Structures are given as structure tokens and as C-alpha cells.
Length: 341
Ligand code: DAH
Image (cartoon, rainbow, N blue to C red; front, side, top):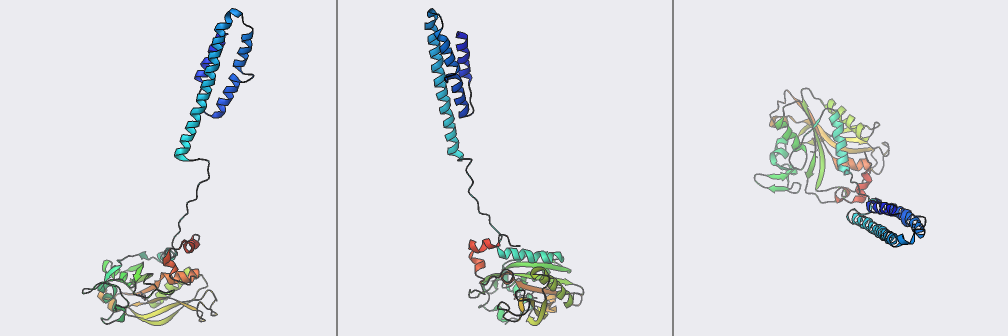
């Protein structure tokens, strides 16, 4: 019997549970009503009286050892569990959702326009937002007294020599012609600044995309076809364009481009103000004076340029009626574009 007691004692000492359920199982197996210790107690009743004292002590020791070991193991496991929850929380709890950001509608539209022109072989060009008079006006054939240079329109950083915030992305045309010889085919997105009162249709900061194509033998027909392709890619296959004569100092001849109104199919509605057409950009053949100012021979090369407001295109695509929404960063507005494009 002593052997059995010692064997059980050894098992109690070596017992290393991994979970609370194992401890309970062990307890029942040893101390339970049908457990091994209980069986030994039964056996004890039948031993010779002279052995009772010695064996009784051994059995008591075994019972105490087993009980205290089981209690100690239980406590150990509980402490480990509460340590874990203190550091890493309840690992089975559902996570708190992190809100995903989305691209700003202006970025979405800009990227789409750039992609269309990249397919036509254009590359993206960039330039500074703080510019000098030469790149924004003089090299683009603005006469010295042109009203666009006026304080009411342009934000000046310094006077004499004039340092200013660019009022249009056409300045990137000049930067590109300085860097590169023809053939030139660039698309130039960027932020521009004008001293305008902020309203639902005007802002002092907005975005434009400029295009410039210069090579030998570039014609007005090339421009018209490129812009028609662009309009169909952005506004849909059924879209038509029309060109109205216009004036810009840096292009001659110049035109204003309209696209057919998709909302009414050209019949006339509130958005197109009954005309069936929506104005989207200015364009024209690069003025020989601009080529000359940038050391490009106008006898050899010709080209076209165009410029459009990204906010305007985005308003037409998404039906946004108030331009200020683009700058307020209200997530209720911005989240509507999560799945756009
Ligand atoms: N820079 C003009 C503006 O801000 C837009 C523009 C018109 C750009 C005609 C061009 C162009 O390149 O050819 O209103």
C-alpha cells in the first residue's frame, strides 16, 4: 500500500495542467468519490491494526498534498489569465472597426483625366505654386497692362520683381518648354489661386489641368480630335463637343469647348440652363509669340494647349452644386465617393 501511496504522491507532484478543466479532471480522478485516494481509504479499513498508524499518516499526507497542490494550480492559472487580459484585452471580443479613408473627389477626377491623356502619350509635368511674373504672364504673351495681372485677381507675395501665387496652370507650359525641346506632350495638374470672393461657384483656391502638345505639323484638327476623345472617355461615348471662338493671350486661334449635356441629352435643362451644352475648358493653337518667348521656332513647330478646372468637371460628373463642399472636409460628403470611379 505504501508503494501505491508514493506512486500517487509522485503523480500529484508532477502534475502540470494547461487548462482549468484538466485540474478539475485530475481532482475527480484522485479525490472524487470514486477516485484513487478514496479507493485507498477503503483499502485502509482492511489493513492490520499494527500498520494503521503509519499508513494513516501517509494517507493524510497524500490527501493534504493533493488538495493544496490542486488549489495552488487553480490560483496560478487564474492569475495568468488575468495578467493576459490586463495586457491584451479579451482576445475573443469583436474588434472595433477602423474607418477607411477614401480619395478626395478632386483627386479621383484628376487621376481619371490624367489617365485619359496618358493613353494618348502625354506625361505629367509639374511646376511651383509660387511663381514669378514671367512664367505666369509675360512668357504667355500677356501684355503689360492686361487686367489678369491686376491686384484684384492675383495674390502677390512680393512686388518688384513680382512674385505671386500662380493664377493658372499655364505657367507649367512655360516651365516645360524651358526644360524640354519639342516634341512636347505634357499634362499638368495643379492648384491655382485667385483673389475671388468665396461662393457656391467660386473659390480662391482651386485646381486646373493644363495640356500642351508641340511638334511639327500639329493642327487644330488634331486638337479637336484629342479633346473629343477626352470628352467621350470622361462623360460617356454618346458625348459630343462644340467649339466656340474665344480669346486667350497665349493661343491663336482660341476656343471655348462645350460638351453636350448628359442630363437632358441636349434638349435643355436647369443644369445646362436650357442650352443643351456645358462649358468645360479653354483651348487653342499655341501663339507664335509664346513659342518665340520660349526659344521654339514657330516656323518649324506648332502646337495646341488646353486648360480646364477640375472642380468644374467633378461638379458635372457628380452633380455637386456647391463648390465649397470640396474644401470643407466634411466626411459625410467625402464618404459618398468611397466607391466612386
Ligand atoms: N489658363 C486658362 C484659364 O485659367 C485656361 C486655358 C485656356 C488654358 C486656353 C490653356 C488654353 O492652355 O489654351 O482660364
